[in-house]
Structures are given as structure tokens and as C-alpha cells.
Amino acid sequence: MPRKLPALNADNRAFWQGGQQGELLVHRCAACSRYFHPPAPLCPHCASFDVAPQAVSGKGKVLSFTINYQAWTPDLEVPYVVAIIELVEQPGLQFVSNVVGIPVTDVHIDMPVRVSFLNVEDVWLPLFEKDQ
Image (cartoon, rainbow, N blue to C red; front, side, top):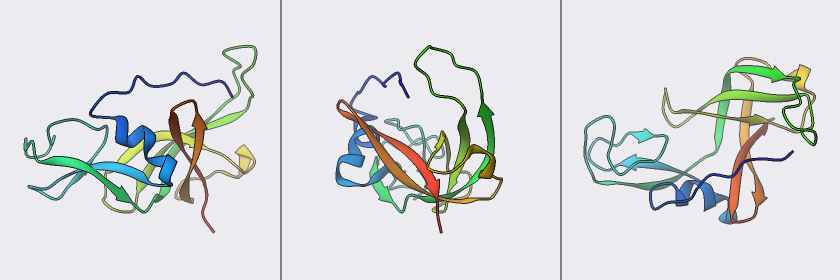
């Protein structure tokens, strides 16, 4: 599936390149101990600048999802799932990704998932597969 790659910067580089070592790196604040996403130089919870990427388990669940049947470009494979994933480390720690590796009709709310990575150029895209 063709993908538009993110522009890497000092704040997000760890998130997009952690997959090279098989790690999902999410920013965490040392002052309030909360994870947050997307990565930023400032904690959105307590405004501390004492933040850094930290490896998380990569396990979570599907909070919501949609199945896309629209081929937005000629080489886009459809259908595919776009999901909101909540990681087990913290309630509310969510981001949007794709669920891959199973038929799109098998995806469901609260389905346990685990991260996998798709390497495209210098980026490791975090995707999610069904966790057994």
C-alpha cells in the first residue's frame, strides 16, 4: 500500500524510527509520569519540558475502526482498516493506525492487538496485528 511518509524532526524521530530496533517509542513525562502522543517537546498534561521517548509494550486494543473501500490512488490496495488503538500502558493513550494481517471483516471493537512495523525508506510505520 503506498503511504505518505512523515517529515522527521527532533520530536518525532524516535517514534518513527524505533521500529528499527523493534520498539514502539512513545513520549513520557518524567514530572507527571504520563505518556502522550503525538510526540512534542512539552507535556500536554503538566507543561513540563522533562519529556523523552520510552519503549512501551506495543500491546493494546481497538477502540474504534472503519473499513475503507475507496481506492484514493490507483495503486492503493482496498479494503483496509483504519483504527484508533489504545495502548495498555495508560487509559487514553491512543493513536490512529492500520490493523493488518487478518481479513478486514474480522476486526472488532476491543480486539487485542500488538504492534508490528513496516519499514519504508528511513521510517518504521507502526501497524497492528491481532494479538492471540
